[in-house]
Image (cartoon, rainbow, N blue to C red; front, side, top):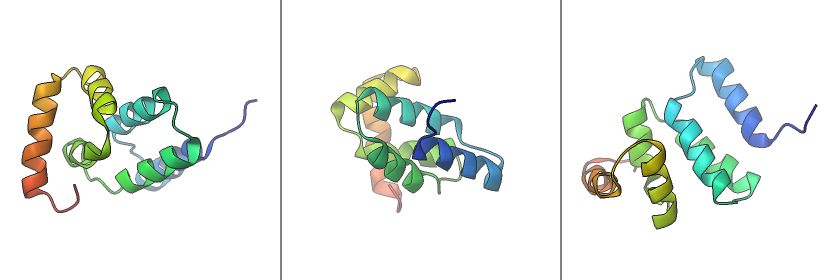
Length: 98
């Protein structure tokens, strides 16, 4: 059996507490892992995102992603990058958490 990462433990904890891990969390995790970021950074970001009540709020909170990460996320969720940037612009104006 392989080593369980802190990110896996976070997801297990969220599933236990909320019985739901927002689907977008898996996409964000995949993007961060594909970028080669370390487990501690990924865990920190996903832990911060875990307070989102729905995927829309969670997507607004992903504005921390750099251009490459945004491109990767847009591709994963089948959005045009231009549309994702537009969403970020609107959410930045109206969101307290984003």
